[in-house]
Image (cartoon, rainbow, N blue to C red):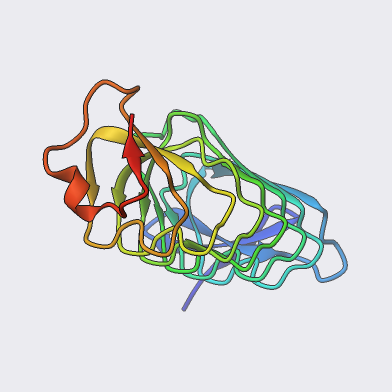
Length: 202
């Protein structure tokens, strides 16, 4: 049986031992436009945003969390029509890549930026899709699965870690034109076989 706690604005539950998952707003009558998920609630560390946590939330415009979170579960921010900005802050717990699961961000037409400068992320299949306004993804991708950034017509470039893994079809259904590997220094051998013809590595 899940045990829930609240910080007054958001609900959380214990999902691994004493680690917490944020499960969305705590009160139907108190849904602020800007939400901050802390790295800890009391003495417990927040490490996940649960599946469907903010799905369909029309109030949500901006969300900020720390990189103590290493998993954004399936559909966490699916169909958030007014979400504009997602910001990932540094914390002392940032040693794991942040994993974006399937449909973590789906059908968020106003989403412009998922910002986490230098943060390592792992993009699963269809993790960011149908986000028509997304034009900035300043994170460092360590692994990307097939069609991970599909149907995001304004997103044209991405940054990858030095030893990033691009799975077969990683950039299918994307408009990516330019890739940067570890500050333009190197790129993995044989990377071009996974890339559409219009993509350039610079």
